[in-house]
Length: 378
Image (cartoon, rainbow, N blue to C red; front, side, top):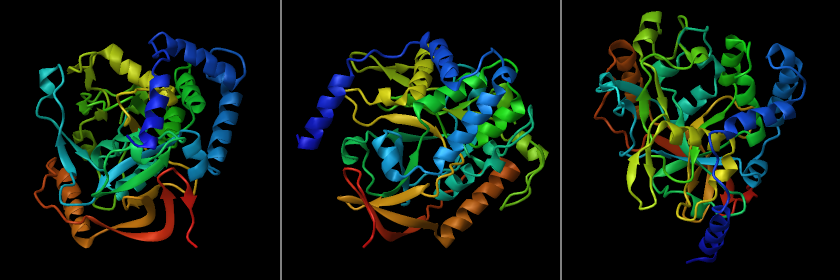
Protein backbone atom coordinates (compact mmCIF):
# COMPACT_ATOMS: atom_id res chain seq x y z
CA UNK A 1 0.00 0.00 0.00
CA UNK A 2 1.38 3.42 -0.96
CA UNK A 3 1.67 6.29 1.51
CA UNK A 4 -1.18 8.06 -0.30
CA UNK A 5 -3.40 4.98 -0.06
CA UNK A 6 -2.58 4.51 3.62
CA UNK A 7 -3.29 8.16 4.37
CA UNK A 8 -6.56 8.06 2.48
CA UNK A 9 -7.66 4.84 4.18
CA UNK A 10 -6.91 6.27 7.62
CA UNK A 11 -8.99 9.31 6.82
CA UNK A 12 -12.06 7.41 5.59
CA UNK A 13 -11.90 4.92 8.46
CA UNK A 14 -12.04 7.82 10.91
CA UNK A 15 -14.85 9.53 9.00
CA UNK A 16 -16.88 6.31 8.75
CA UNK A 17 -17.61 6.51 12.48
CA UNK A 18 -19.69 9.64 11.92
CA UNK A 19 -23.46 9.20 11.95
CA UNK A 20 -25.25 8.69 8.64
CA UNK A 21 -28.01 11.19 7.79
CA UNK A 22 -31.59 10.20 8.53
CA UNK A 23 -34.82 11.27 6.77
CA UNK A 24 -35.96 13.34 9.74
CA UNK A 25 -32.87 15.50 9.26
CA UNK A 26 -34.34 16.99 6.08
CA UNK A 27 -36.81 19.14 8.02
CA UNK A 28 -34.05 20.14 10.43
CA UNK A 29 -31.75 21.08 7.55
CA UNK A 30 -34.45 23.28 6.05
CA UNK A 31 -35.06 25.07 9.35
CA UNK A 32 -31.33 25.69 9.79
CA UNK A 33 -30.98 26.84 6.18
CA UNK A 34 -33.75 29.41 6.58
CA UNK A 35 -32.07 30.67 9.74
CA UNK A 36 -28.84 31.21 7.78
CA UNK A 37 -30.82 32.88 5.00
CA UNK A 38 -32.21 35.41 7.45
CA UNK A 39 -35.51 37.19 7.61
CA UNK A 40 -38.75 36.08 9.20
CA UNK A 41 -41.92 34.40 8.07
CA UNK A 42 -42.93 31.07 6.59
CA UNK A 43 -43.64 32.03 2.97
CA UNK A 44 -41.58 32.91 -0.09
CA UNK A 45 -42.90 36.46 -0.07
CA UNK A 46 -41.93 36.89 3.58
CA UNK A 47 -38.30 36.10 2.72
CA UNK A 48 -38.14 37.52 -0.79
CA UNK A 49 -35.57 40.21 0.06
CA UNK A 50 -33.26 37.66 1.69
CA UNK A 51 -33.72 35.20 -1.19
CA UNK A 52 -32.77 37.85 -3.75
CA UNK A 53 -29.74 38.88 -1.70
CA UNK A 54 -28.57 35.27 -1.27
CA UNK A 55 -28.99 34.47 -4.96
CA UNK A 56 -27.12 37.59 -6.10
CA UNK A 57 -24.24 36.89 -3.70
CA UNK A 58 -24.02 33.22 -4.67
CA UNK A 59 -23.75 34.03 -8.39
CA UNK A 60 -21.22 36.77 -7.61
CA UNK A 61 -19.14 34.30 -5.58
CA UNK A 62 -19.16 31.90 -8.54
CA UNK A 63 -17.19 34.42 -10.58
CA UNK A 64 -14.23 34.01 -8.22
CA UNK A 65 -14.19 30.20 -8.04
CA UNK A 66 -10.84 28.75 -9.12
CA UNK A 67 -9.52 25.21 -9.33
CA UNK A 68 -7.67 25.66 -6.04
CA UNK A 69 -10.54 27.18 -4.08
CA UNK A 70 -13.03 24.50 -5.14
CA UNK A 71 -10.64 21.56 -4.75
CA UNK A 72 -9.39 22.55 -1.28
CA UNK A 73 -12.99 23.12 -0.13
CA UNK A 74 -13.99 19.59 -1.22
CA UNK A 75 -16.28 21.05 -3.88
CA UNK A 76 -14.56 19.75 -7.03
CA UNK A 77 -15.98 16.89 -9.08
CA UNK A 78 -14.39 14.79 -11.78
CA UNK A 79 -16.12 12.97 -14.64
CA UNK A 80 -14.54 10.84 -17.36
CA UNK A 81 -15.63 11.29 -20.99
CA UNK A 82 -14.65 8.40 -23.23
CA UNK A 83 -13.40 9.49 -26.66
CA UNK A 84 -12.61 6.03 -28.11
CA UNK A 85 -14.68 3.54 -30.10
CA UNK A 86 -16.15 2.15 -26.86
CA UNK A 87 -17.88 5.45 -26.09
CA UNK A 88 -21.66 5.26 -25.67
CA UNK A 89 -24.07 7.92 -26.83
CA UNK A 90 -27.48 8.26 -28.40
CA UNK A 91 -30.60 6.30 -27.49
CA UNK A 92 -30.67 4.31 -24.25
CA UNK A 93 -33.19 1.79 -22.99
CA UNK A 94 -34.54 2.93 -19.65
CA UNK A 95 -34.07 0.64 -16.68
CA UNK A 96 -37.04 -1.41 -15.56
CA UNK A 97 -39.17 0.03 -12.79
CA UNK A 98 -41.87 -1.57 -10.67
CA UNK A 99 -44.55 -0.40 -13.09
CA UNK A 100 -44.58 -2.80 -16.05
CA UNK A 101 -45.64 -0.09 -18.50
CA UNK A 102 -42.21 1.49 -18.17
CA UNK A 103 -40.55 -1.44 -19.96
CA UNK A 104 -39.01 -0.95 -23.39
CA UNK A 105 -39.03 2.81 -23.24
CA UNK A 106 -36.11 4.85 -24.47
CA UNK A 107 -34.41 8.13 -23.72
CA UNK A 108 -31.77 10.11 -25.56
CA UNK A 109 -28.65 10.86 -23.54
CA UNK A 110 -26.10 13.45 -24.60
CA UNK A 111 -22.86 13.33 -22.62
CA UNK A 112 -20.12 14.72 -24.84
CA UNK A 113 -18.32 18.03 -24.18
CA UNK A 114 -20.67 19.83 -26.56
CA UNK A 115 -23.68 18.73 -24.50
CA UNK A 116 -21.97 19.96 -21.33
CA UNK A 117 -21.87 23.39 -22.98
CA UNK A 118 -25.57 23.01 -23.78
CA UNK A 119 -26.29 22.21 -20.15
CA UNK A 120 -24.60 25.45 -19.14
CA UNK A 121 -27.02 27.40 -21.35
CA UNK A 122 -30.07 28.29 -19.23
CA UNK A 123 -32.24 28.66 -22.35
CA UNK A 124 -32.27 24.87 -22.72
CA UNK A 125 -34.07 24.51 -19.38
CA UNK A 126 -36.40 27.48 -19.42
CA UNK A 127 -40.10 26.74 -19.80
CA UNK A 128 -43.52 27.81 -18.73
CA UNK A 129 -44.98 25.96 -15.73
CA UNK A 130 -46.74 22.83 -16.97
CA UNK A 131 -44.83 22.80 -20.27
CA UNK A 132 -41.67 21.05 -21.44
CA UNK A 133 -38.13 22.32 -21.67
CA UNK A 134 -35.62 21.04 -24.21
CA UNK A 135 -33.90 18.78 -21.67
CA UNK A 136 -35.55 15.51 -22.73
CA UNK A 137 -35.40 15.97 -26.47
CA UNK A 138 -31.76 17.13 -26.40
CA UNK A 139 -30.79 14.47 -23.85
CA UNK A 140 -29.45 16.95 -21.30
CA UNK A 141 -30.08 14.73 -18.29
CA UNK A 142 -28.14 14.60 -15.04
CA UNK A 143 -24.81 12.74 -15.20
CA UNK A 144 -22.65 10.87 -12.73
CA UNK A 145 -19.34 12.17 -11.39
CA UNK A 146 -17.12 11.76 -8.32
CA UNK A 147 -16.53 14.29 -5.55
CA UNK A 148 -12.87 14.87 -4.69
CA UNK A 149 -11.34 15.40 -1.25
CA UNK A 150 -8.90 18.29 -1.41
CA UNK A 151 -6.38 16.85 1.07
CA UNK A 152 -5.67 13.64 -0.82
CA UNK A 153 -4.31 12.43 -4.14
CA UNK A 154 -6.75 12.70 -7.03
CA UNK A 155 -5.46 9.38 -8.39
CA UNK A 156 -6.55 7.47 -5.30
CA UNK A 157 -10.08 8.84 -5.51
CA UNK A 158 -10.93 8.22 -9.14
CA UNK A 159 -11.57 5.48 -11.64
CA UNK A 160 -9.14 4.76 -14.48
CA UNK A 161 -9.27 7.35 -17.23
CA UNK A 162 -6.75 5.96 -19.71
CA UNK A 163 -9.17 6.20 -22.66
CA UNK A 164 -10.82 9.39 -21.58
CA UNK A 165 -10.56 13.06 -21.08
CA UNK A 166 -11.83 14.29 -17.74
CA UNK A 167 -14.16 17.10 -16.84
CA UNK A 168 -13.51 19.07 -13.67
CA UNK A 169 -16.50 21.06 -12.41
CA UNK A 170 -17.30 22.64 -9.01
CA UNK A 171 -20.47 22.14 -6.99
CA UNK A 172 -22.13 24.63 -4.64
CA UNK A 173 -21.30 24.60 -0.96
CA UNK A 174 -23.53 22.43 1.26
CA UNK A 175 -24.87 25.65 2.77
CA UNK A 176 -26.01 26.97 -0.61
CA UNK A 177 -27.44 23.59 -1.58
CA UNK A 178 -29.45 23.53 1.64
CA UNK A 179 -30.73 27.09 1.25
CA UNK A 180 -31.91 26.38 -2.28
CA UNK A 181 -33.65 23.21 -1.14
CA UNK A 182 -35.33 25.08 1.71
CA UNK A 183 -36.61 28.02 -0.33
CA UNK A 184 -37.83 25.65 -3.05
CA UNK A 185 -40.31 24.25 -0.52
CA UNK A 186 -41.55 27.54 0.92
CA UNK A 187 -45.30 28.11 0.50
CA UNK A 188 -45.94 30.50 -2.34
CA UNK A 189 -42.66 29.77 -4.13
CA UNK A 190 -43.32 30.98 -7.72
CA UNK A 191 -42.82 28.12 -10.23
CA UNK A 192 -41.43 30.41 -12.93
CA UNK A 193 -38.78 31.79 -10.55
CA UNK A 194 -37.77 28.30 -9.41
CA UNK A 195 -37.54 27.15 -13.03
CA UNK A 196 -35.21 30.06 -13.80
CA UNK A 197 -33.06 29.41 -10.72
CA UNK A 198 -32.75 25.68 -11.49
CA UNK A 199 -31.68 26.55 -15.03
CA UNK A 200 -28.85 28.67 -13.62
CA UNK A 201 -27.57 26.64 -10.66
CA UNK A 202 -25.45 23.50 -10.85
CA UNK A 203 -26.75 21.05 -8.25
CA UNK A 204 -26.21 17.61 -6.83
CA UNK A 205 -29.32 15.44 -7.16
CA UNK A 206 -27.83 12.54 -5.20
CA UNK A 207 -24.61 11.43 -3.53
CA UNK A 208 -23.21 8.21 -2.09
CA UNK A 209 -19.98 6.76 -0.70
CA UNK A 210 -19.57 4.33 -3.60
CA UNK A 211 -21.21 3.38 -6.89
CA UNK A 212 -24.97 4.00 -6.81
CA UNK A 213 -25.67 1.53 -9.65
CA UNK A 214 -28.36 3.96 -10.74
CA UNK A 215 -30.07 4.26 -14.12
CA UNK A 216 -32.45 6.40 -16.12
CA UNK A 217 -35.99 6.15 -14.76
CA UNK A 218 -39.13 6.82 -16.74
CA UNK A 219 -41.27 9.39 -14.90
CA UNK A 220 -44.37 8.88 -17.07
CA UNK A 221 -44.39 12.56 -17.99
CA UNK A 222 -44.90 13.46 -14.33
CA UNK A 223 -41.76 15.20 -13.04
CA UNK A 224 -41.97 17.78 -10.26
CA UNK A 225 -44.77 20.27 -10.84
CA UNK A 226 -42.36 23.10 -11.58
CA UNK A 227 -40.14 20.86 -13.71
CA UNK A 228 -42.72 19.81 -16.25
CA UNK A 229 -42.01 20.49 -19.64
CA UNK A 230 -42.16 24.62 -23.32
CA UNK A 231 -42.97 26.19 -26.37
CA UNK A 232 -41.58 26.06 -29.89
CA UNK A 233 -37.82 26.64 -30.09
CA UNK A 234 -35.05 26.24 -32.64
CA UNK A 235 -31.88 24.20 -32.37
CA UNK A 236 -28.69 23.64 -34.32
CA UNK A 237 -29.93 20.42 -35.90
CA UNK A 238 -33.57 21.19 -36.80
CA UNK A 239 -36.64 23.00 -35.59
CA UNK A 240 -38.11 21.49 -32.44
CA UNK A 241 -41.90 21.74 -32.42
CA UNK A 242 -44.37 21.34 -29.58
CA UNK A 243 -45.28 17.93 -30.97
CA UNK A 244 -41.67 16.76 -30.83
CA UNK A 245 -41.24 18.08 -27.31
CA UNK A 246 -44.31 16.19 -26.15
CA UNK A 247 -43.10 12.98 -27.79
CA UNK A 248 -39.81 13.06 -25.86
CA UNK A 249 -40.72 11.14 -22.71
CA UNK A 250 -39.58 12.49 -19.37
CA UNK A 251 -36.87 10.64 -17.49
CA UNK A 252 -34.63 11.35 -14.52
CA UNK A 253 -31.28 9.93 -13.54
CA UNK A 254 -30.70 8.80 -9.97
CA UNK A 255 -34.25 7.75 -9.01
CA UNK A 256 -33.33 4.07 -9.07
CA UNK A 257 -30.38 1.92 -8.15
CA UNK A 258 -29.06 -0.80 -5.92
CA UNK A 259 -27.85 -0.99 -2.35
CA UNK A 260 -25.19 -3.09 -0.68
CA UNK A 261 -25.87 -4.78 2.66
CA UNK A 262 -23.34 -5.81 5.33
CA UNK A 263 -22.53 -9.03 3.45
CA UNK A 264 -21.83 -7.20 0.22
CA UNK A 265 -25.03 -8.44 -1.44
CA UNK A 266 -26.68 -5.98 -3.82
CA UNK A 267 -30.43 -5.38 -3.70
CA UNK A 268 -32.87 -2.85 -5.15
CA UNK A 269 -32.75 0.47 -3.30
CA UNK A 270 -35.87 1.45 -1.38
CA UNK A 271 -37.50 4.88 -1.41
CA UNK A 272 -36.04 5.53 2.04
CA UNK A 273 -32.54 4.69 0.85
CA UNK A 274 -32.92 6.85 -2.25
CA UNK A 275 -34.03 9.71 0.01
CA UNK A 276 -30.83 9.19 1.97
CA UNK A 277 -28.84 9.81 -1.20
CA UNK A 278 -30.57 13.16 -1.57
CA UNK A 279 -29.71 14.00 2.03
CA UNK A 280 -26.09 13.23 1.27
CA UNK A 281 -26.31 15.55 -1.73
CA UNK A 282 -27.28 18.36 0.63
CA UNK A 283 -24.36 17.43 2.92
CA UNK A 284 -21.98 16.16 0.28
CA UNK A 285 -18.73 16.25 2.34
CA UNK A 286 -20.22 13.37 4.34
CA UNK A 287 -19.77 10.92 1.45
CA UNK A 288 -16.00 11.09 1.90
CA UNK A 289 -16.11 8.66 4.78
CA UNK A 290 -16.36 5.01 3.71
CA UNK A 291 -13.26 2.85 4.33
CA UNK A 292 -14.31 0.28 1.70
CA UNK A 293 -15.08 2.78 -1.09
CA UNK A 294 -12.49 5.35 -2.13
CA UNK A 295 -14.42 6.29 -5.30
CA UNK A 296 -17.78 7.86 -4.59
CA UNK A 297 -20.57 8.87 -6.95
CA UNK A 298 -22.63 12.03 -7.23
CA UNK A 299 -25.48 12.77 -9.62
CA UNK A 300 -24.77 16.14 -11.23
CA UNK A 301 -27.17 18.54 -12.87
CA UNK A 302 -24.61 20.59 -14.80
CA UNK A 303 -25.92 24.13 -15.20
CA UNK A 304 -24.71 27.68 -15.71
CA UNK A 305 -21.61 28.61 -13.72
CA UNK A 306 -20.26 32.15 -13.74
CA UNK A 307 -16.57 31.30 -13.24
CA UNK A 308 -14.52 31.73 -16.44
CA UNK A 309 -12.42 28.68 -15.45
CA UNK A 310 -15.08 26.01 -15.95
CA UNK A 311 -15.81 23.65 -17.54
CA UNK A 312 -12.19 22.51 -17.25
CA UNK A 313 -11.02 19.56 -19.37
CA UNK A 314 -7.84 17.53 -18.90
CA UNK A 315 -6.07 14.40 -20.11
CA UNK A 316 -4.31 12.16 -17.58
CA UNK A 317 -0.80 11.09 -18.64
CA UNK A 318 -0.29 8.64 -15.72
CA UNK A 319 1.41 11.35 -13.68
CA UNK A 320 -0.58 14.56 -14.00
CA UNK A 321 -3.70 16.01 -15.61
CA UNK A 322 -2.85 18.01 -18.72
CA UNK A 323 -5.30 20.88 -19.16
CA UNK A 324 -6.60 20.78 -22.71
CA UNK A 325 -8.97 22.15 -25.29
CA UNK A 326 -11.36 19.58 -26.74
CA UNK A 327 -13.00 19.52 -30.17
CA UNK A 328 -15.24 16.97 -31.93
CA UNK A 329 -13.96 15.26 -35.06
CA UNK A 330 -15.79 15.84 -38.35
CA UNK A 331 -17.00 12.23 -38.37
CA UNK A 332 -18.38 12.52 -34.85
CA UNK A 333 -20.18 15.76 -35.64
CA UNK A 334 -21.85 14.05 -38.59
CA UNK A 335 -22.87 10.97 -36.58
CA UNK A 336 -24.22 12.88 -33.59
CA UNK A 337 -26.12 15.27 -35.85
CA UNK A 338 -27.80 12.34 -37.60
CA UNK A 339 -28.53 10.69 -34.25
CA UNK A 340 -30.25 13.74 -32.88
CA UNK A 341 -32.20 14.33 -36.06
CA UNK A 342 -33.45 10.73 -36.00
CA UNK A 343 -34.37 10.99 -32.33
CA UNK A 344 -36.21 14.27 -32.74
CA UNK A 345 -38.06 13.10 -35.86
CA UNK A 346 -38.76 9.43 -35.18
CA UNK A 347 -37.70 8.64 -31.62
CA UNK A 348 -34.96 6.31 -32.87
CA UNK A 349 -31.50 7.80 -32.59
CA UNK A 350 -29.52 4.53 -32.53
CA UNK A 351 -26.34 3.83 -34.50
CA UNK A 352 -23.56 1.29 -34.87
CA UNK A 353 -21.09 3.95 -35.99
CA UNK A 354 -18.30 4.52 -33.49
CA UNK A 355 -16.00 7.38 -34.49
CA UNK A 356 -12.56 6.71 -33.01
CA UNK A 357 -11.57 9.07 -31.62
CA UNK A 358 -14.74 11.10 -31.27
CA UNK A 359 -12.77 14.14 -30.15
CA UNK A 360 -9.31 15.59 -30.45
CA UNK A 361 -7.54 17.37 -27.64
CA UNK A 362 -4.79 19.98 -27.48
CA UNK A 363 -2.77 20.65 -24.32
CA UNK A 364 -2.68 24.27 -23.16
CA UNK A 365 0.57 23.83 -21.22
CA UNK A 366 -1.07 24.06 -17.80
CA UNK A 367 -1.46 20.95 -15.68
CA UNK A 368 -2.77 19.70 -12.35
CA UNK A 369 -0.58 17.47 -10.23
CA UNK A 370 -1.82 14.24 -8.69
CA UNK A 371 -2.15 16.09 -5.38
CA UNK A 372 -4.22 18.88 -6.86
CA UNK A 373 -1.72 21.67 -7.41
CA UNK A 374 -2.56 23.80 -10.46
CA UNK A 375 0.64 24.58 -12.39
CA UNK A 376 0.60 27.20 -15.14
CA UNK A 377 2.69 26.85 -18.28
CA UNK A 378 6.09 28.51 -18.13
